[in-house]
Image 1 (spheres, rainbow, N blue to C red):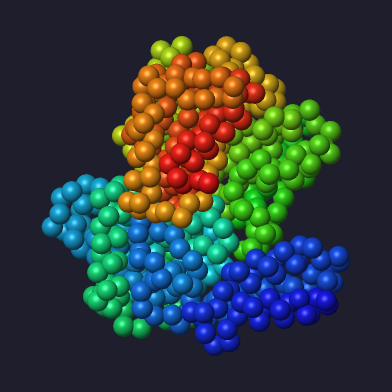
Image 2 (cartoon, rainbow, N blue to C red):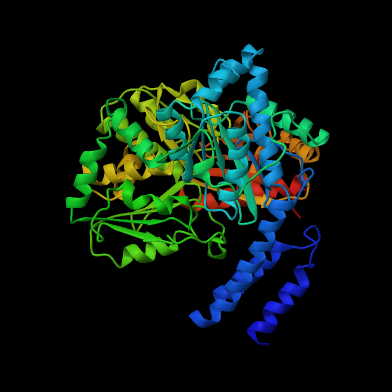
Length: 585
C-alpha cells in the first residue's frame, strides 16, 4: 500500500466530512504521527505531516464554531479543568469559564471567605490589578487565550499577555506584577488531544477548593442557561492584540528572573553568580529535553545563553503532537538525554526532561536517574546543610520517606499533606522545599506553584558548588540518612466517581496488623495513612499507597522499598491488591 493510500484509509476511517461530532480527529492524528515517525526518509514524512496539518485545521474549525456545553461538564480539579480540544475546550467554552471567573469576583464583593481566598477586596481591585494570560505549546493555545482575553478586556480587566509560557514563569509574573490572578491554557503533561485551563489566584499558587468549586458551579450555571452577564455578545478572536484595550505585553521569564534575584537572602541561590560559573566551567555540561513544550523558548535565556558546549537542547521545536510520545518526565522519555550525555566528554553532566508547561522535571547525571522523590530530599539537604538555611521540609504523602529521615536527623519538622501542590499553602513561608511525587518542586522565596526551572537551577547549583555529579551527591546523602527505593505507576480503569471510590473502599480490609504478600514472604502493616487514598506502612519501613487520579480515569499506586530488589515486588503486591478490588483482571 502506498503512503497516499495509507493516509486516505486513515481519513476514511476517522473523518466524517462536515461532521465534527462524529469525526475522531485525534485518533486520526495519532495514527498519522505513527506513520510519520516510521517514514523512511524526510521526503516520505511530508505527506503524513500535510495530512496532520489538515486535520488540525478541522479541529480549529470545531474550536471556533462549536456552541453549547462541553461534551463533559466543566470541573476544576487539582490543576484546573482539562478535556478534549474541540469537544470540551473550544472558544465558547473557554470564554464562558473566563466569565465564570469574573462572576466569582462579583460574588466576592459580598463574600468574605471568597475575598480571603482570592487575595483581593473584590471585583474593582481585580480589574485594576489585572490578569496574566499564557498558554503552553498545545494546538489552539493562542486561539483559546484570545477567547479569554476578549472576555477580560470587554469587562475592563487589565491583561498581561505572556503568550507561550511555562506555569512557573506565569506564577512569577503574578507575584512580580501584583496581578489578581492568572489564566494558563494548559493540561500539563496530559496526551496531545487534551486542552486545559489553569487558574491561579493572587498568591500565584494553585487555587483553593473554595475557588475551584465556585468556578465549577458558575460555569455549570452559565452553560446550562446559555448566557452570562459578563460574556460579550460577540467574541472577536481575530482582532489584533494591539487593538485590545488594557492589554500589556508580559515577559514572564524576566519576571521569573526578577523574583529569583530579589529573594536570594531567603533561598541562598545567587542566580547571576551561578550563570557566570556555568559559562566558565569547562567540566560541566547541561542537556535538557523540552519535549517540544513551552520551556523550549526559555531555556537558553534562562541560563544566559551559555556557550554551546555548556547547553544542549533536545526536542526544542514546535510540535503539538510531541513526536507521538506521552509528554511527561519518565524513564522511557529520558533515553534521548542519556544518549546525548554519553557523547559528551565533560565529567560533570546534568540532564533533565521537562513536561509541556514546565512544571515538572526529572534528572540524570548520565549514569543515575533521579526522580523528584530523591531530588526533593537532595534540595532540602542542599538548602539546609550547604546554604545554611533553617526550616521544615514539605512533601506530599505519596513521596519517598528519604526527606523524612533527613528532617528527623536534622531536628526539623515534616509537613506531609495529601497529593496536590495547593496542599502546601499552610507552610509556603516556612518550608525550605516543597515537592511532590510527580516531579514538581518549589522552594522558599519562590513561587507557590511547582516550577521546573527552579529545579534545574538547583541541580546546576548543587553540581557546581559540590563539584560532584548529582548521583554521587545522592549516594552521599543515602549513606548518611538511609536508602529508599520508590516507584510509581498507574492503571486505566473503567469506573469513575462513586463507583471507583466504592471499589477502592475494599482496601480497608488491609488495616494495621494485617499482612500482605511481598514476593515469597509476608509483611505486616503497622500503620495506615488515609488522608489521600490509602498508604500502608509495612514493618520494615517500606510502604504501598493506592489512590484515584485527580485528573484522569486512572488509579495510581506508589511504593517504596528499603532495597532495590524489593521495589518490583511491592509493585506486584499493589497490582494484586487492585485485582482483589475488581479493578484489575
